[in-house]
Length: 272
Picture 1 (cartoon, rainbow, N blue to C red):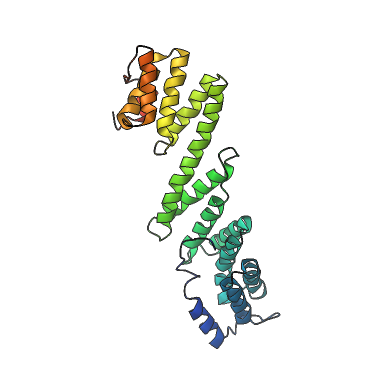
Picture 2: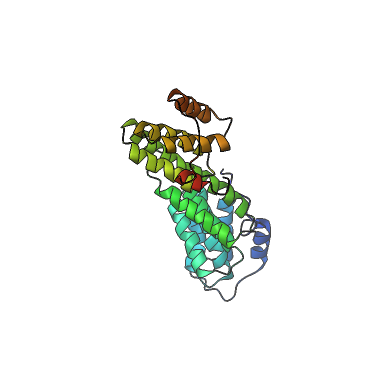
C-alpha cells in the first residue's frame, strides 16, 4: 500500500462514518436502486480491504444514484482517493479537480489539491523522458502550498517541490552534457545556465558551474570560465567539481576570479 500522508478529512473516522450510516437515513435522498448508506458502506468496505478499483466505482455510484445526498460530497473526494490508490492517476486528478470545482469551500478541499499534486508526482519518469508531467506536478504542488501554506499537506508538498525541481534540473544537465559531447557548446551553456538561474537550490548546481568552466574555456571565453570556477569555489569549496575546475584553469595558467559583470555573478548577487 502506498505511503500516502495520513488524511484527516474523509479518510479519518471511517468507523464513525459506518456507525452513523448504520443508524441514520437521508430522507431527502432519492433511492434509485440501493440505499445511499448501503452503497457508501460497501465502498468503504472495499477501500478498507484494499479493493481500490471497486471502491472508486462504489463511491462514483453513490454520487450517481444519490447526487443530492450528504454522502455524495464525501463520496466525490473518496472516489479521487480510491482512484489514486489504484494507480488510476488520470481518473484521480479528474475526480479531485471536479470536487474542487464543485466544493471550493469544503473543509476537505486542501486534500483534493494534494491528491491532484501527488497524482502528477507519482507519474514522474526518468530524466531521459519528456518532463511535462514533472512540470505539472511542480505547478500543482506549488499551487497547494500557495493556497494552503499551513495545511498538514504543505510540508510534504514542499519536500516534493524540491525533488521535482531537482528532477527538472537533472533533465537540463543531461541535455547539456549531450550538447557538450557533440561540441555544441553554446547550446550546452544555455542548458547549464537554466540550471544556475532557475534551479539554484538543486544538487546539480556544482556540476553545472564546472561544465560552464569547461565550455567557456573551450570557447576561449576565459573570464566567464574563471567566474564560473570562482562562484563554484565560493559556494562549494570542498566539492570535487571545484577541484576539477581549479585544476583545469591551472593547467591553462589561469585561476578562479569573478567578473562582477558576468551573468553568473548576478545570479548570486545576494551572495557576492
